[in-house]
Length: 378
Ligand SMILES: [Zn+2]
Image (cartoon, rainbow, N blue to C red; front, top):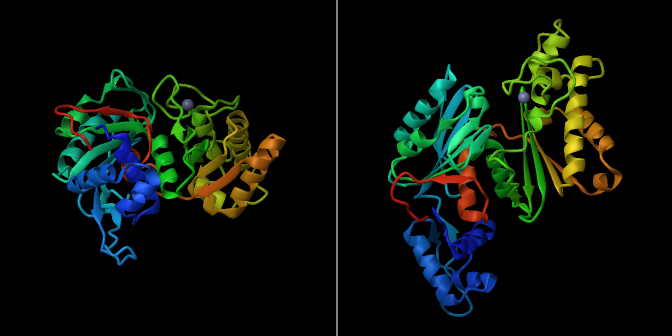
């Protein structure tokens, strides 16, 4: 699923600015008017872009604006996470088409067969390709999941059945945190050359993605940045990674109950009414603060994005950010921008669909592509 650099250049401008004519694209990209014309015709033929209504222009000939085509082709998003598999279609502007289909799975052994079944039922002739996000680590060479909360620590699971279920279509696989970072970058029209640290905090599930000059850092394995498995010398239940003391076990309802059995409220419920007299939640915040602040000091990103439902509770969020800032190095705290993002669909198939959009609008984003049979070009 190679998209040529020049096609991507045109698509990037149309994504970010929309409504540009062939002449304006020529001026912005430096490509020849002829070259722009050919690329545009090809993208129109593939139903990736379309022409808008002609507008009067001073030059005499009407100006025809070009747009990303939201009506014809779509990307199928697939998400595998702990206890559930979801699929959906998103159009080339990232909007959900129809509904998100979610299937709960009782055992991790059902994850791959369920994904295959859902894919077969959703793919149709207008599907451009499939974009899948998985928690944990993926081996890009052997195309296996090495380790994932979706599979409760089972490893060496082949992605081949999913590729086959996609019936000739290429599939992009990447970590769910990279998918979330893609969604943030594309929805916030972010500066693509920035270094960005994105931290997602949910009850018992913490993930992170680090973008260097706008691209996920490569590392030695295809994965996100494992902030959730940052370990502390604190007693917790055993994590699915096999260890105790992982940050994502600390920032969890179970941890709060273990430290204060008298309060049956969940993490979210306790954060909603957070005041000064909740030592177990304060302890969890302290560890979360240390992990985030150490990561920021280490990476020195231009921007920290905190993605969490918890950000809707001002007292909790203010406490967390005040403590994080208190631990940052002086010159870093002055420069790093902090964004809060309450994105309820953070880890499902819709975000996997957004990951797929990076193939059209971002250079060299990463992930792996599996193509079971004849390769097609997008
Ligand atoms: Zn762990």
